[in-house]
Length: 387
Image (cartoon, rainbow, N blue to C red):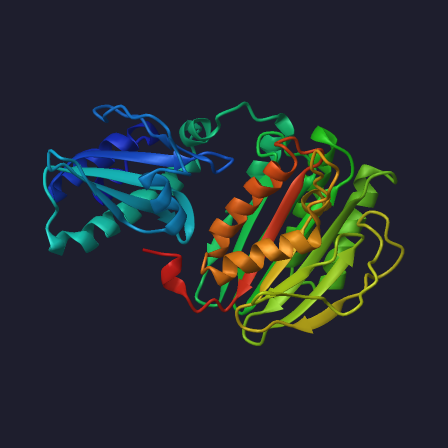
């Protein structure tokens, strides 16, 4: 499979994966990718690949394998043996692979099958960089131009090591405008940005693009947080006009010590969930939004404890209003995150479910973009995130 991949067209990946899986005894292999909203698993078509229906993540064995990052098995009365194996890029869940055997595969092949599916996932990510095949498949609706810009700008939704897990979510997935986020992990430092651009649609997306590009430029030039905030402020004010601005939180975590520094530029304040408790940060009056600053932004500092979950989010989360007028609110947000942590649920699945919960709270009619990034420091539980 690796040798064949060098000249493999993206359209042929599913067929090649099925063909080469026959050496393990799999008579059928079907790849499924998760859609942008992370509610459905969509089959990848290819020559010789059997037809399949899309599968909901909730209420199916395939969805359970995706949610729990586990290899699951089902056996039909005809002795057909079906494996559902998560497709992972690092710890980011791309979808699942379905492998069908005439009988139970030999025990000594199980590790090889997992490794093979991991290889297929990595090839899928590599091919995705220069094709539209997988992006088209993953969209169950038409993306707005603003959403197209935002999804193209985002880093992978999930990243993890044995020291840190970072995972994010955006809604409405097909019409997101001004909300976005970015992160980078360099050595023992994790940098985070969550931003909410003024306005809606394409103008807000354009503002977010300038802001995040300026953020990355300053970060990659080795600047400290106040200087990074200043660079983004200058980029917005200097190129987009006085009426344009964005609220944001910029954060930097030392992964060795748990030292957290952050700047709040007119944004909802970060939250820390520690066990089942919401930890309030020290008083930190926000600076003015990026694009409207009148001096060096103030940087604040605290310490995380192992297992803490840091929440950076936009007001579309906490101000999501139900039909009866009640806000989703900080307490409900913290309770949701702490209950998931107590249940042993990994951060990526917690964020996926949270975004569904926020949508349900507002009767599936968000009146504002909603985004969140959750950072979990020193999870020490790598096996919950990988096969």
